[in-house]
Length: 129
Length: 260
Image (cartoon, rainbow over all chains, first blue to last red; front, side, top):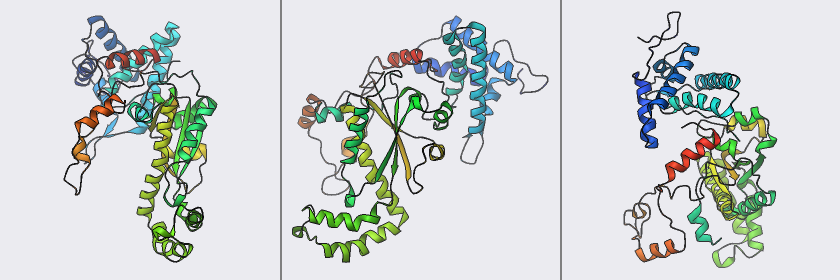
């Protein structure tokens, strides 16, 4: 069972069946025309899960939190988007501290960015020069 | 480079070599080309502010981004902010008479100083200047001509280039353009990190749906012999996507640490 932020927050061990996560994995594989290897899929799901645990929000709620409904359809919340971008940057910085590896840390942040991008939220990362 | 090849090779480049600067002479060449564009009433409708990415504080760089303009801003070392100047008609009376004096506008076509003073200025230009919608449309079109020449010249100079959106409110604070200028686009300049063909020519609407002969709705029929000639001359190039494009983009994303 998934719940939104709160004291009883919990996530299933395998978040791969949650609608937004499923959509991400399928869309990403379709876009790049590549099937996901199990290990890579596991790594991505574990990374996204870690981020969601830190933020106390499940993946579906994370995506929902970035849109507001309007009579013309959903609209992106730009301020919320900026906040989430900062959260991802912090998540990546923590990974950098732990691994002392810029590239690995970037991959960590990019997993969350990719999840959001394929769910319709434009994300960017500073270029690694 | 041959002109037709320049037209054929122009793409919106979104991956630049971030560490390779653009020579100042090339930036100037791009601006020189913009200055020479066709311009109504022979007035400059475009203004440009050149910014060097590495001379700008990180906070300003970030503030200028919008969701559709992200990594390419980090990668391109030179940014040209283009603005339209709707005040251009204000001095048109003088510039048109100048065109009469140098033999560009001639009596053979009905032009004289009196025609400018008594007819064109009060009956044509002043009404246009007072009609915001028309003025904005003319400003955008005329500035667009300058930007187009700047784009093509960048290609001719061997650069990658693109025009894209920017946060105009933040740009107002940071770049301090004159109050009356209209923000249009930011043109990026840099050396392309992706193949200059950008994975092929982007999809275009069919020729016959765009261009007509005699009357709207009567298609201008495309002559295949002309198309073949233009293919040989490099103006019409193969359409996207090239077979290897996804692999190229994936490799670039990984090289620069961008999301997939």
